[in-house]
Image 1 (tube, rainbow, N blue to C red):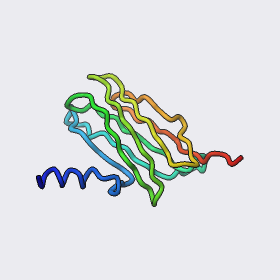
Image 2 (image 1 turned 180 degrees about the vertical axis):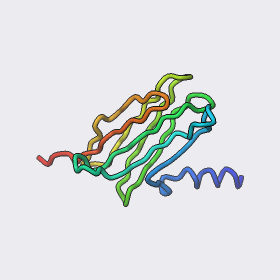
Image 3 (image 1 turned 90 degrees about the vertical axis):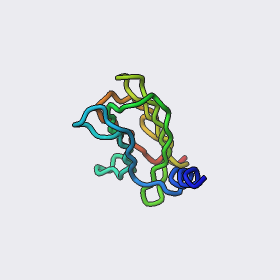
Image 4 (image 1 turned 30 degrees about the vertical axis):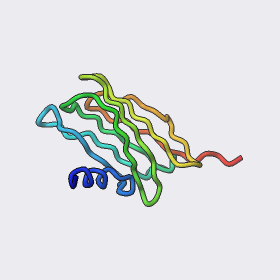
Length: 122
């Protein structure tokens, strides 16, 4: 029972952070998968989500995460590819923002970035 409660607390969106890492790498030199929410340095966007895709042990799953940067929260869904097939990740920003592109396919040992921009006011 305590373990189940601890898992629920750890999985809580209230504990969202700017980055999340998961998985056991297949190669000793590799690292876990990583999602990171950060501000854009060049001013071309408000924020960006970067996904470092590493080849991991285990079966393909669909995972959902909440990332938070100073109160700016986005939802991210990662769909694992089978074996060495690429992963797909999608970003859902808060109202008033849009993700460009909203979804991206990232090959094994590659990095992909989705930008988040303010929607124009009409």
